[in-house]
Image (cartoon, rainbow, N blue to C red; front, side, top):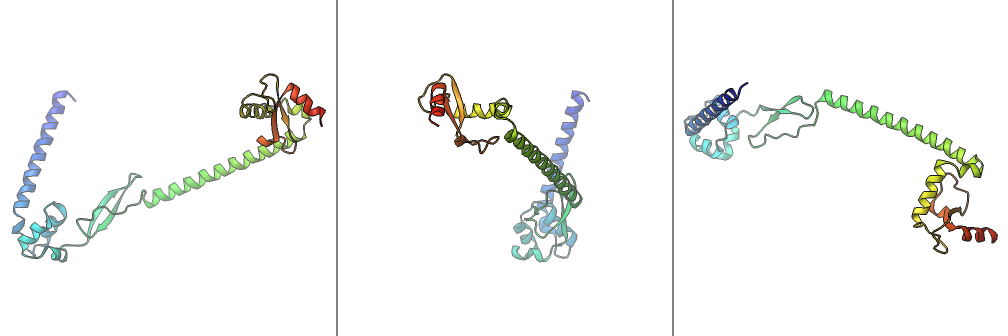
Length: 212
């Protein structure tokens, strides 16, 4: 489509909008011409236009509070849901055209629930698998010789954590060279807590073992 064709369509749209506005104004000007016996016209003015109810009531010669008695209450509105489908909802007042619609239609909601259940099952399976792997790893870390344990990636990670927490200095004298990470106990080997460890320099570490 060329640029001129696009501008031509825009002009047609504008002309149509102007024509529609003129027709709406004409309808509003003639709202007083309807009668209580003309249900089709009365319903059209009530539901399809933005003419104030007081204007329609004035033309009919009735109180605005009683106009609901004369209009059709079986009007519906089509609402587009988040799932892309539409649902029909009844409306009882022109001022209440926003029903509390669900996010999804019944079919899409059932599909969504099935997908959620499947996702939860997969998460549960992954959790069980991860927990089993953790238990097996912990058993292996606890049972292997201590010298081998100190060579594992797990211990390297735990050691670095302890050093960072101690700001890379001896917890007793503040020395920053030749730092060791000492186990206060071996009960939690493989899943050490911060309280299970202490950072010591080489000299303090040797003194600690001499005093045991």
